[in-house]
Length: 465
Image (cartoon, rainbow, N blue to C red):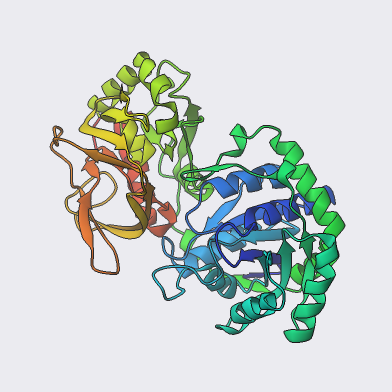
């Protein structure tokens, strides 16, 4: 067991779209500008917000996800404690509203993470169009259930109104105000169907983050936030979870990293590296073939539908990937990566684009969200990642559908189930492939990561999984 003083604060919200990401990034940027080493975290299964955290924190400290459904509470504690070590302050961004989580019970919510990690929370609240009602809303959030809320930041609030709201909640609720942020269109982050546009696609992203950081220094009580974070209780976590993570080989794993494929959990990559995988980045958009002498392949989620024409025109890469997988190269392909391996991808304009053609299915972007939320995956047969009956918690979020003949003969490798009793078969799984919509957090079942690296080892040695 390890115990440490880890200054930390959570920036939570009353709902999605409350301004959590802007506030969190501004606070990270402001503390970084003071010379503090800042570590970012994100509650829940989010890929894009951590990309903004990375830009805001700088210094090569990748933001980490804290997900109490996909990982156990012990794993979340370890991932927080081990990643927060060495930072002067950790800033955790919440997900959705403070109490929103699994189903309607508040499990796996921002509040659950805050309480499990002993992290004081500050609510980001937009009081636009409210007077006294603002106190009523905040009373609901602070009194509804046991929580870690220690104060409020008023978002989209002009200076002339801030004093009113500050005095109101102090008088009516005894809740501390940590300042306000005005509307800042010049520092906004654009969004699209899967959430925010990635920061690599935002013009002047560093300038926008600088604006946010300077604004936080002007109108937030940054000294008070730092004092709150430093007053966090000693954090204790069990590091036994990492005791059996041993290096089991030395393999080179190609990993797609470009505008089309960019959804990663930083802790997944770190786990694979600890097990002996050297991750070799490449671009399915720009490169003509996989990196030389690789023993495995990772195709993550992202936005292949936004780049389908360019992906399709890169026939050399498509053919190289198809040939490598036909030859038994171990591969994990999640969501967008799975779509890349199918026969075709039809974009939102109804234009079909040829893909790798390794999986006998066709995908098409639809007009609405097809699946969203947490699932538990249970293997229907032995496969690369686990034996029959093996399971891992996962997350789905996609606007496309895939269907077609199971020409490879190994579809329906897992059953996905939800707590409300719904279930369905999914995932193309073979001795050398995991390809499907569900995203995995490998710390939810470390054996899945270990088995992938072992499969890459066997491939390197000239065998098959």
